[in-house]
Image (cartoon, rainbow, N blue to C red; front, side, top):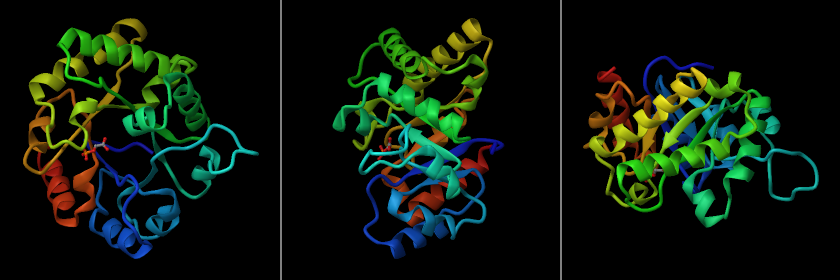
Length: 242
Ligand code: PGA
């Protein structure tokens, strides 16, 4: 399920409150290049409203069986999920998911035919070389069991944690060198061309900054994805810059 051009991943997090609101939001963002990741209870309702956008999930579990509250990537695939956000900073920091656990999810998603959108990012604002080192070590630990042939089947979401939900997006000047650092690392060590997107307070006012970079494959949008007008404006800007 390859998307041509830059992508917009809509991460609704634990929103909205009702199926009806989820359906209305899905209809408003149903455009090419968009991946909509609703909370699990609304996955099927959202899927039934999509014609152009692609269905995603916000997580998944690597096994099936006696794991109360979890749902597997195979189960997600069976209801039409094509992409899964994995290792979002809220999972890492609020739910104590470490890169070792995340690596099991990445592997299971790929096995189920789902493209992982693997999130990485430094917690505090640090220097550029430190940020590159931090995200690369997170990334390598999160894909430690992944065959080299599968690496290009992962979308990496570079999301500085300090920029998420704060309204303080990282500037292109801050983001681009880190993304380039990851791209170069994979090129040199594995001869792989990685697809990397940016996330963290993406708004209609700043999205264009990222889209002009040839190294940034798209954006992951949290807060703004919950407002129909703002989401549509962002999608339109992305489509107009590619
Ligand atoms: P935000 O969330 O756009 O509200 O900062 C981004 C995210 O979900 O990572």
